[in-house]
Length: 468
Image (tube, rainbow, N blue to C red):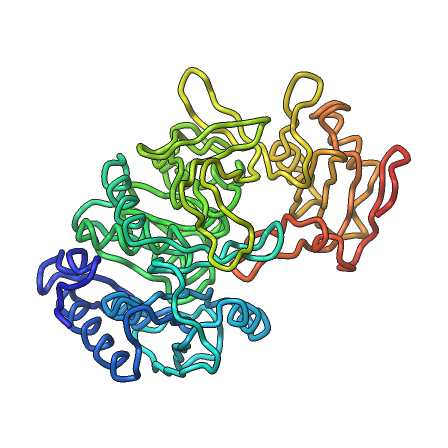
């Protein structure tokens, strides 16, 4: 197997021999990256992994994790990336659906999930009954599962390279030699493509936090030029202990979930940099960006070149010519895929603005206008006793509100919403819980069935609505 025989070999060839490719607990050079990736390919080949094999990868976030990914890709294997935060039950369920031929487990010295180590043990196991790849996808990721069962999504190498071409042309993306702190797991779409692969493409230096904790994220961000993370990472940084300085920070990009306006304001006031947005889906990669934060949340910027989007009935759709799903039985005829995100487009600028997440088959038109579910969430979170909120709609509009149950008052919440939103834009039902459920990756669940599991507090209708 030649070193330059695979689709990403040119990416690994970027960067000077002794220049730093990535920093964790220590620094790794580009030469180390190339050598370790080639060595992992030889070892994995020795375990019997060949082109067309399916390989599930799970375990400690690490440099080793990336060396194994590059090694598997160079062998022509289909890599199934599992989130490091998955527990044993969730992992087993996904493995049953994927039926990979091999499982590669990365074991670091810590038992805590999500703790980064520079290098770790690699365990390779051939699984009975595993299937070879039935498609040419080089990587398989799972959607977040915020609105139901996670779906297995495949990306072709041509799709990844095309996305890198689009990212390279965007103003604000990391530049050669800059330090890029990738705060989210590289098993996530933007962490992998917009973080790791784009940094390789431009010979930037990656920085990984030692753990998914406020202190570790602050330490990784302190010397970075660019931050790539999820909303909770920026919430941690916005409320970090006094003394944290980000003197090199040029761009901060949030993706993966809704960014709170309060977090955006606090972060900008403290560090002098507006948080930008990168919006996309696991199925398509990046769709729209506002990397410099010019338009502000909940706007997510303009669609990136080469991506076709439209809004139909208030729901954002994107053109996807081939099915991205691997294990679904439904036929795929190509065309427009609904994102289930409620959205509108500014006719003057082309900027996309998100209004929430569609639940069921309802559409957002109401009294000639829009019901902005994200605005309702923002209003609810501004209440002094509310710690978090998810609003589903649209018939009825349901508010799932988290906070101390002994301090949340339903009539007060109803009056609060009507004060800022009026009658037409206020929730029809309120469900009070001590905290909202989240996915393994930290996203707030937006599936009514899971939100209404017996978590705790009372579900309360307003104005005679049926109690759930």
